[in-house]
Length: 188
Image (tube, rainbow, N blue to C red; front, side, top):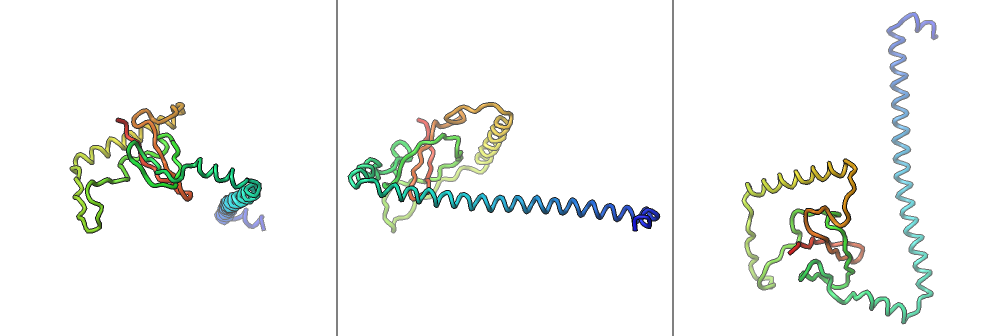
C-alpha cells in the first residue's frame, strides 16, 4: 500500500532507492547485452562477407584462361626474394608492399644479423649490451616522444603523409600466406 509507505519515510526512501538501483542496473544490463550481441553479429557479418567474397573469386576463376593465369602468376615474381630494406633480402614467394614508417613504429630492430658461418655447430657471437643507464635515457626520450605525438594527434592537427618527419621515410613489408613481416628501412 502506497499510503502505508508514505507514513514511514525511511521505508519509503529504501523502496525508492531500491527501485532506482534496479532500473539503472537493468538498463546497464540491457546496454551490455546489446553491445555483446552487436559484436557477435559483426563478427558473423565479417565471416559471411569473406565467404561470399571467396565464392565470387572461385566463380570468376573458372572464366580465366590458363595462359592468362600463368602470365599473372609470372608477373607476381614470386620466385624472387622479398627485399626488407636496401641490401637486406628476405625470402622468396612474397609480395613487397610499401607502407608509412609511422604506421607501425618500432624502437628496436627485430631482425638480428650475425656474420660468420651458418653451421649449427658454430658458436653464436656474444651480443653487445648497451649500458643500463644509456638504455634508460633512451627509453625516457622515446616515452617523451610518444606522449608528444599522442598530444599532437589528439589536438586535431592534420598529420603529414609518409611518416612523422622524425625518422625513416618508409618501411617495406613482405606478405605471404596472409602474414606480414615488417622491418624498418634506416636512412643512410
